[in-house]
Image 1 (cartoon, one colour):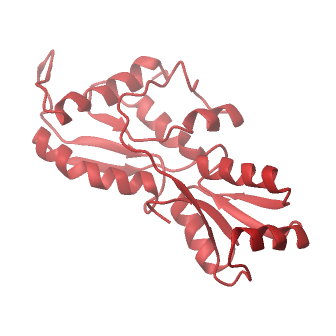
Image 2: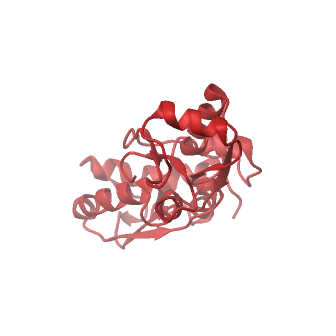
Length: 212
């Protein structure tokens, strides 16, 4: 199935009126008459996954059908979006993704156009990023972190859910503003990156506040 603007518009928009309590019917009968599929383009444990698991129960109650969550991670969220776009346009597959999906597609080669092929349907939440460091790092303030980074160029590594995500861009903005030489390590999601931060493989991260 070709990836088109109509694909995501249909598979995401149909669930929204029902969530708001509006009546909805498909041309060939009442909708929904079977379980719905909610694609999460990141691994379990990250902000998008947490948000999806918070939204799914009331959505299922409102629709009278179960909502099956499916994690499809990779490509800074692109793998899950492509999976959604390739699904049958019948209103039973939709996706929760992030705003930096556009920047991720601009920075890396993706099999879809971030504007022409993707239509945002509903704004669910705003999530802030916070700077966190491994407890073994000998710093206790941002000023001390900057001083440490300048004294140890290339020895600080920060993780992100992928190239072009807000976590990645926050790290690059911090590098540019402070002149620190840090190494970016992209992961398939925020959960795995946070695990490595706690384990000492990473020294810092600009993680989403809801999952860090």
